[in-house]
Length: 116
Image 1: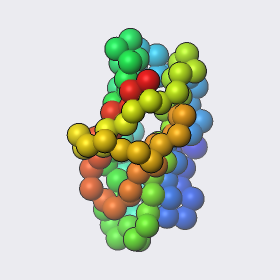
Image 2: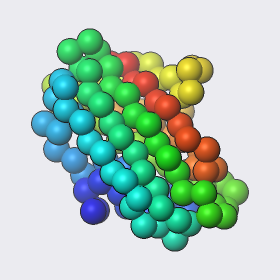
Image 3: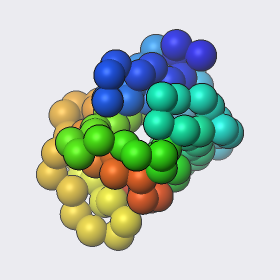
Image 4: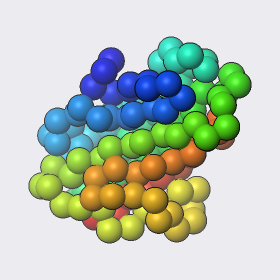
């Protein structure tokens, strides 16, 4: 569980410990109904690194997440490439580093597209 989902107070760390090989082209990671302090949480990640991107759908917990709840999604490219561009729910997103995207955790589903 700690490889895929960690909770630190009101912050969530997704995929913090996964090996790079888990995000090779065509691979999928799926977590359903993982227990958290704020209710069940799920996410799915699909790798299309052959085309230059990885997509994720995140269903944050919805049971009273406190204001300021954050989700940190780590996407380690199999070849060590860094994230160049991110879209969240179809809109440009600027809050990311080389391999981590910082997202709001307010309970609404998120569709993330990271381009490398």
